Image (cartoon, rainbow over all chains, first blue to last red; front, side, top):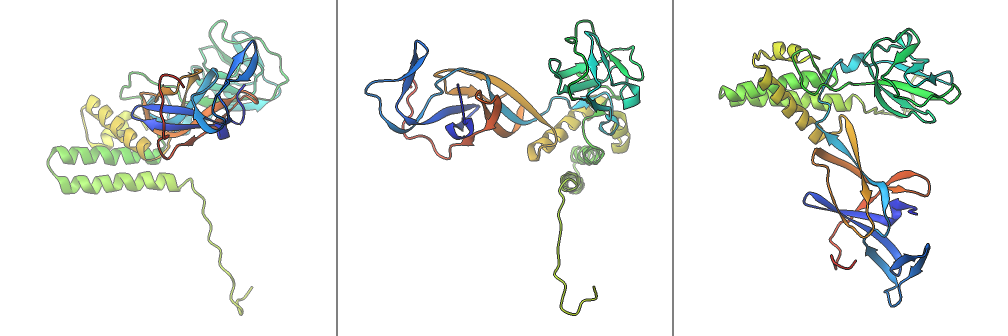
Length: 227
Length: 91
């Protein structure tokens, strides 16, 4: 059983791989008949060893990717949300989330807090003001009681067309327009114009990021300040 | 914003080219920051130290290992330098 993995595992990036090591202050061990035993003549002290146990889905990478670049609905319109202890499941239907909560048929939703139905699902036609319908045998039946949250999430378009939306905020979509203008200028050999549009592109990307960072400035009042 | 609206604003007529450039722009945005994140999970195998980075990963934010004691993934640290001894065959 792994424990305190933040202190006992380290990694190193080597090309397209990572090398994973476990830190131990001990000697090498093995499991014999369910008991972990120290291997005789093994060095005792600080050392890095290969992972000494199998952990299902134990290694998690977090990062950015290109998947879900195009979606069916603008990010700003993806607002369906329902939460409470009155949400219940049959094998095909959620009761407690519907058009009253901003959802629509064919929406992609993320369920959290359920006893047995957490995950991402796509609804089908037939929903109502307080219900969402899914394909047969999607859920495990569950009565109301648990504190459950249902959020609408972007539904990916695998083969984008002109009516597909870019999975970006409006500010970043405007930045993309500058990027395309820059590439068009590059194609026509106008490097100066390209540089102008690329500057605009990065400016908007920077704006989008700084919009999410809250900063404050405080001043001390001087002695004779009117308060 | 739809692809059509972007094309009209940028005055470009070729849809496929526009989509390719939009992907390039998203790639640049995702390379510089973390606009939207994804996670990948793989099994840790006893005695194996090499694990491939996800092929569609653009920018790595963190690597975590599951603490089975309390069922949570915990971020792990990167080694600054290579271990002095690397022994592949008999860990």
